[in-house]
Length: 283
Length: 156
Image 1 (cartoon, rainbow over the protein chains, first blue to last red):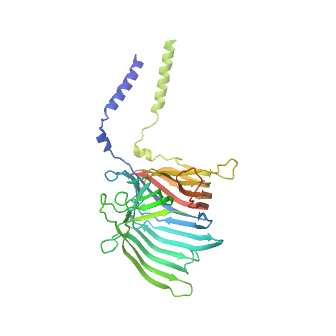
Image 2 (tube, rainbow over the protein chains, first blue to last red):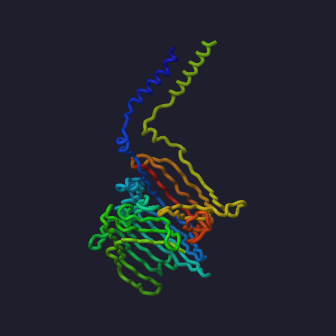
Image 3 (tube, rainbow over the protein chains, first blue to last red):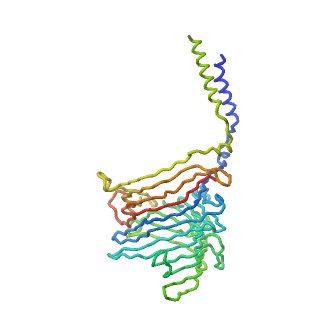
């Protein structure tokens, strides 16, 4: 008799537990939010090696980059400024959006260093192009969006960029020898104001609602094409105006051994609007 | 006989109850302090569509379809193939230094080797299985990478 009461007590306990939960309507359920995104970051990242990535055209000519090395310095406060991956609601009537946000990186602590060698091989002539070296590349905010296009098939995406590069140099004698180089120092890319001055905000080059970029395949009068498009700015979902951006290069200098440096000074493109871009690849 | 079985069942149940009572309850903070060999590492050797093997596939296609105006079009990647050797990726769960939760730590591999890894052609066509037309070229990776550091993943 006593053994027989045990299942009954267990059933009562479960029933009591179930009564603690509250029913929710669809509307209430749809408002539930939790830890629904993913943060990620690098720690102590670096890479190097002798791997070569080669593109070979159908006629046999090829171009390559090789010996890529890269590293990134970390934020002094771990976990405080990560990359963010979220799925967010799209504009009314449009699909949801996968949003990939870069770190705000306001202090500029997260700096990238890159170097690689490159070359071409065409018509039986192989040519080593030397090295490309990028020092202190800093992304400050910005990010990427991915969604479905407003019309037709394909992959719609958006991109916003604020980028500062300490120095970009082309060094024909290799990454360890800067005695001969073309050096672009202090490269700055970002949004600009009405006067063409950099505002410090990311330049929205494409937006999945206001001015979407699309990758797809289409047919034109000469056949099927791989297609990349940046659509006209959309007044329905945005201002109808393409955002303005700018490019500033603080200094351009050529160096050669036993020669005085040739200092070309600075270069500046105050305001750029990309209203429309259409690229089709064909053989 | 039935009484003896009932007694045995009761004794057995009591024994189980005593064994079950032995573990001590831990709260979340105490549980976070428990450590052990709680991560895994793995190495990989991946060989895809190796044309040197007997009976290898000679026409493998990866296609992505689009339909905008009633006509199907496909981006076709032909013969994605090659070898990747990787040693070693580690995977573990750790506690954040700021005390705001845990994270997944992925240790990057110190050695990655690509051997003829790439694809033979990239094209756009209306029939994904038809002979390749309008080939835009091929890509290929050969050589090694050495990576250091870790990727940290957590929820927000």
